[in-house]
Image (cartoon, rainbow, N blue to C red; front, side):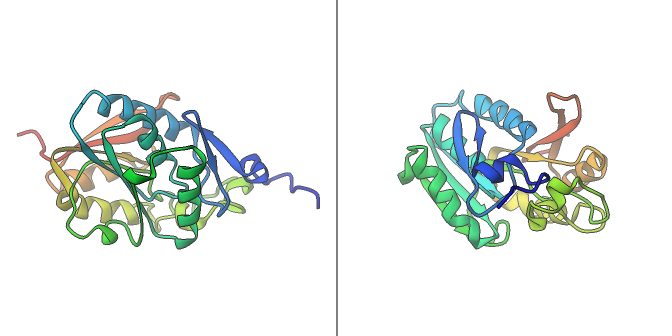
Amino acid sequence: MMKNEDEPLAYSIGWQPFLGLKIYLDSRPLIPRPETEWWTEQLLSHVGRTTSNITFLDLCAGSGAIGCAALARLPNARVFFGEIDPEHEATILKNIQENNLDASRADVRIGDLFAPFGDMKFNVIAANPPYVPAGRALPASVADYEPALALYAGADGLGVMRRIAAELPRHLAKDGVAWIECDSLTVAAARALFEAQGLSAEIRADHYGRPRIFIITSCAPC
């Protein structure tokens, strides 16, 4: 069978490189993007300066690329993966195994956002949640192949972000940090959601110069 010209190459070959890892896409999760790879490297460089044991959550994990990179680069971290789609669990486990990562420090849980983690708190939370408004037109290579569950988040694109902001204070440890990818077109509205919860949300541009990531701490400056 001939490959459709719109099908992403990563799905066709079955994997995507990510920070030196080979991220398999067997269950067809969202394909890790260069901008996500860029900020993940920034985050891991920042976190890697500490020598204490930490708990790290890859929220909305999909393929588990972010969490796998944390396992590879943070030997002092216990890494949790949270993903709503049960089909991706086997893919995450495969990515841990095939990249020869320390599975004893990994914990994969399936459920809606923080639900699988009870009252757990994390030193580091990293997330690339759905943030595309439902009415926005996307290229056929994205809209026709990548999972809508990982892309769209209601009419304004903030449906999932709203819930993360509301639940984050309960799950971010004292002096913890969350790095959350956002849509550059709704960044101001998204930032307001976190600030309304008493959180400090710094906006950082990606390597293309677009607002891309929130760096969120548990206590807003007075």
